[in-house]
Length: 233
Image (cartoon, rainbow, N blue to C red; front, side, top):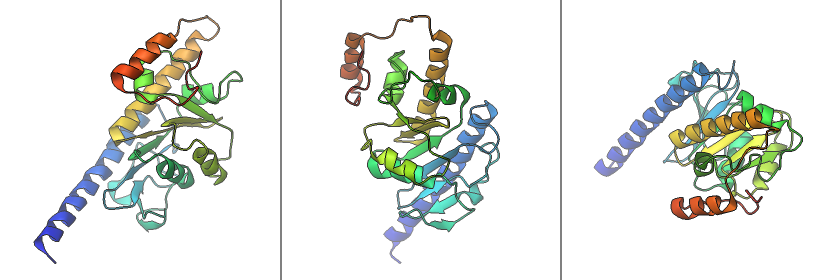
């Protein structure tokens, strides 16, 4: 084997080791702060060399073992580690349609789940433009109709968005957020949860949202890409 190939393999292995540790570190943080209870929720990260890492089925995000994370090939087949989460089709659909996605976080966080159950939610924008940071980190959030956990049909629903959304809410289930890094996906998921909490606190109180002009200013200054009708008033 050439020296250059050996060096590349060492770098790839080092990067994978770091990502395994990052998944466990962020998972524990989310669990300890009550953002996904019990064995709920899952995290995945794409690998530079192809394939991806994902948390195992029935695993608590608070007690992950880096060595037992599921390593999948590009077709989603298990290569090593424990059996993967049943939500693999959900992750696969987001990776397939949103090319910039490098990591995905799916939680059962209380306020986001509660939001997904409200009758007035717009499927094209589950939350109004409440704060600048919500728009900057999440953009707009689509609402996916209810499917049982692990139902492959949810993948078709995700693909129907054609990669326009980086954050979605699964009705009566929880948020799914993609990011260009694991850190970005985690932070965006946390922002979504806090914004859902704000919405529930202010529901029925006629709060002041960001105006269309303020949204346009954020889009211009920060280069945001919002889905059509994503935050129309």
